[in-house]
Amino acid sequence: MNKPNITDIPRQRIVLHFVSSETACIPIHSKSGEHGRDNALASGPPRRARAFLGEPAPFGRECCVRGSVRVPRISIGSLRPLRTPLFALAFAICSLVSSARAETATTPNVQKLTLRDATQAALLNNRMLQIERINPEVARMDIKAAYGYYDPLLVLQGRRENVSDSGAFDPANPAVDSGFESESDVANLGLTGFLPSGLTYNLGGTYGHSRGSRNFLNFDSFRVNASIYLQQPLLKNSWIDLPRLTIRVNKRNLQISEHGVHFVAMSVLNLVHQGYYDLAAASENLQVQHELLSMRQQFLNGIQKQIEFGKMTILEQRVAESQLAKVRTDLIASSNAVALAANQLRNVMGVTATNWTEDWITPGDNLMVVSQTFDRTESSQRGLSLRPDLNQITKSLENAELARRFHRNQLFPSLDVIGSYGRRGASSVQAFPPDEPTASRGDAFDQIARGEAPSDMIGLIFSVPLTRTAERANYRASKELKKQAELLVKQKEEIILREVSDAIHNARYSLDRYRAARESTDFARNALKAEEDKLAGGKSDINFVLQFQQDLAAAQAVEITAKHDYLKAVAQLYFAEGSILERNNIHVEFK
Image (cartoon, rainbow, N blue to C red; front, side):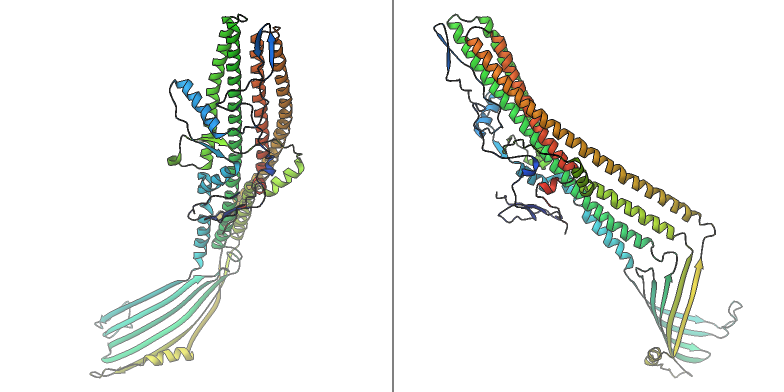
């Protein structure tokens, strides 16, 4: 089955695989395999309904003779999956609206929608999924921002200074006992940063050029130096610190957000299945009501003919007319149920407000019940291993353990080893006025290169809070938060096991109810035929026939409900065990 061309969505991060012989504009493809086999659905050739919506139900060709009057035998078709032609359903809907409003209605467009098409549209356009898949992109940016802590910081500074002093005695600085004037150009270069081991580094360099007069001498001087300073924690902030904690937590937050997209995709797919089955059930119920309407109309026509021959009375005609009017009322309610179910499915599919139309949606798949055997143990194990919402909570538990380890590290005293190394170079010349001395910049840099004036340092820095009140409280809180995260994991596991068990029970009981409903429908159909034969032979009353007609329609409605409840229960089971995407050949990838 070819897939229609799809428009690209900005910042798309989901790759959903479908089978297609065409190349889509965004990476949404499918693996080979026919849709629906794992969803307890099987497609079979559509069986032709005896009477379609908008068409009169045919009379049986057999006739019963009562006296000299030929009375047509009224029959009803067996319950079948809805496979109504588009023009028939459109005509039926228009007929209902026309009879309810007593005005002429325009035939609406009717769109056939398969479950696969609905799934594809929802995975592309559903708002919940569009909102959720932004979270991984935000989480990636959070990781990059956390790594920004290790970006080196470059500092450049340049200035010109003019300093002069009269030379008067300064009690605060007795060394200055003579006047001077100087003009200096100073430049500083610094590069500082951190390494993932917790190491702090600082590379620095200073350049200064001064000229002026002092002690009645003119001078010119160059001074340069270069140094490196390192500080490495040995206890506190050694194997983990706040930046490293933030990066690790953000990495797990990315995985949590990806699991969130996976879970929302599962939820959307489950909602599509539930909505599609609701629409199919409403459409089949509408078909049943229309067949009942046609049956009642034919029955009324037969009574009117019997009145002409004096075999029946006006009272019996009034009874038949009242029952016909009741079916018309039920038809309107059924058509409204179809419209509401279609709107619900549109909403899950992400149909925008500007694209809402009066078109009617009808299921395009022939949904049938396929009996399955359910293994509670296997489904439970699958749910505990595949459910993305459980994986999210598990990752949160890992974050809680990281936080506990960090706060435990903060209980240690701070013991850092420090070290530095530097080199200096200088060139200075003095001369009596009016001579202008000239120092050599190259000599100063050559001294640094030769290491003529080195300096080095190594040492330890020890510090510890005397009570460590905050550190102890934070560590105790982190342990409690980890216990809470562990309980949340256990709680989610219990919820998943409960959901799997409930889904299996619903699927089993819905299947049993469907089988019983089929038998009930067959019995109701046989009972109606027998009562029609009795009426044709003059041994029954029209009220009994009308009641058996209603009983058959009710049995068909119960069968439809049971069938779609089973399909919904199977879809819910696949959701509960986390395999609904895999069973529909949909895979979520992040790039």
